[in-house]
Length: 165
Image (cartoon, rainbow, N blue to C red):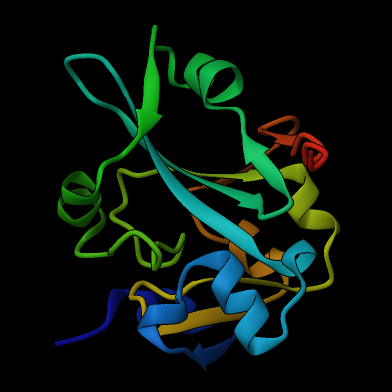
């Protein structure tokens, strides 16, 4: 059985980085393996709340937050949008789990929208399709996917941490 993630990466510059599945979530991974949050990109599946339930994979830096309620919803052309749940993520991504979602190897009908800020990094680390690996690559490898489109303003800066009382 071929691995759709590795197949999609075949001709693209990348490295596969193994990781402990318990440390797959972004903050834990960066802390445990020494990657900067600025170089970590989250691949997030979003679905439109309509009968068709359109799905998109949004790739944003971990130091930003995906603008689901405005930018993504408007681009999807739906009145409402939300993060795909765990079950729908597995079903519609070809078996990927939350914490391991990657833009590489998704079904052809799932577009990939890459926030323009991702393209400013020298390299990014993204999910690897499962919780036991990540993919380290230049942003150009993500943008080279046939269904990828770089989008300005897909993500917003994270709000400053609230002061401790």
